[in-house]
Length: 328
Ligand code: NAI
Image (cartoon, rainbow, N blue to C red; front, top):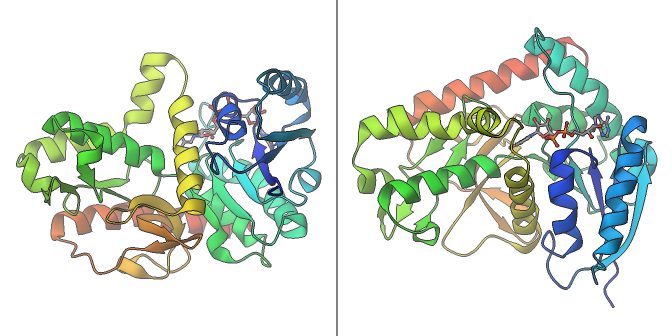
């Protein structure tokens, strides 16, 4: 029998955690043949709630779930782990400046990076979901010098999935008719959802839409501000859809992306498309043999260039801020 894969989830008692853990345990994260052991990390006041979720996981009698351990100590939680989903983060409170937010999250992602460096398995893969996700990933990575840099990624798959549905609904086509959509840049309101390289039943997404005003004034802001719209409607932030995107990201990372398509993920830049090396920025990516690769050779027109540059500029500024704070 296959050895179980150790999956650590931080913020396990939060709302994304609640939507995520059952899907991991059912086999959707890695595949239906792969047994899993869950390692849940929470802060002490939330450990009891995590224990309650673990009771419910037990009560599902998932055949693939081979154990659940709960920790309030990062070193223990990441010991021997193969997949780390860093969901728990410090949310922005009223009056908090961007620098304060990055500093507060540094207090979480620095020790977690150190703990991953100290004890995670050699094949460790890290997905940061907790916001500001790209820069939190950069902080964790900086404190895990023994782990290959490309194992640290941040989630833009939710943005990708949001964009897929907006485009499919506009064109009256199904999701499976659309290939090669891209989210570029930061997981923030500056992100750029690109339909110029997308293919819809063989033609370009932008040509199929043929409506510049919709693209500029409707599609791009709808995708970029969807998180706020969900909060407005639901009274709470996206949780099940975020968990779903985390499942998609890791599943594709481990199992590969389909031939003839790509997806979006924030991974360390190698300088492609003018994105400064080392920034964890969203790109068009394929997964082959367990690694993400940036899709090369796309022509970027002026409309896209301006928007990619603006989002990458924001990432550079976030990196400058965490450098000044001594967090990287
Ligand atoms: P939540 O507030 O319901 O849960 C967060 C959990 O993290 C809490 O249980 C808290 O106790 C825990 N936590 C805090 N500090 C921790 C630490 N140092 N170690 C372990 N656990 C810790 O929040 P929710 O809704 O689950 O969202 C989590 C994060 O995901 C937020 O930062 C949110 O902004 C982000 N998010 C990211 C998305 C993306 O597309 N990248 C989409 C949606 C949410």
